[in-house]
Image 1 (spheres, rainbow, N blue to C red):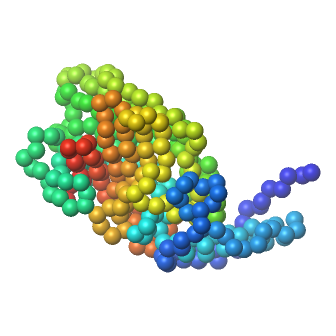
Image 2: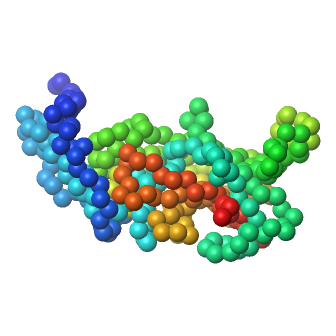
Image 3: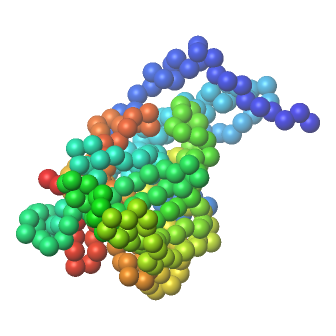
Length: 304
């Protein structure tokens, strides 16, 4: 039997779809799908399934329109959590240090609230989120100096997580269909602390750990990702694990994507803070606010 392959939509059909707006509406609380990550709810589509093969093109167009309308019923961010495509966007981009946005200064308390500790003996930290050519999301944090790190002794911690965008980067229709896997994180991750001696160019391993999960973590369109829950964990030991969670930010429409890292010599909550612009949709960018790090007795937050 000849395998059906959907045809590309013509400009005549694309035009009315692109005209549909993404104005934020009330959060739709939906039942959890049986195959979804625990704690993540899914907006279910209520429209009927396909009919005959002769109507598949028409059904594909109809499904796309209904998927867009279903998505409009879920706010990108609310007091309960963030939409899956919002989190996928935050995990699939690199941060930069324009205007010092990657810098976190010693802070008086855990978020929210607090103030800078200007007399702290601890140096500020720089948190970098990069997408590597080998398909890994990498988070690196290290001490920061105004005049750079050249010639200075430097300790850094790197965490690598396999990342996949099954449908490619954000594209119309592929990105919005209900149930589409937007992003997945692989089962094998690692963290390593490294030290570079003054005047050296070479980092040497201090401590490292590998973490394994039994399943991949997937973000599917239509899900609502809750705040203040462990969404996925790699590793099972009491002091040797890597956890993913999403926490609220300090301001309205802000959220933090956090990794809780624990192994020998390292126990850190490492977060990037993002702002969701008004009327955000999957074709827009998020505003990168800055990092937040919690090392137990020491807190670091993006500069005011």
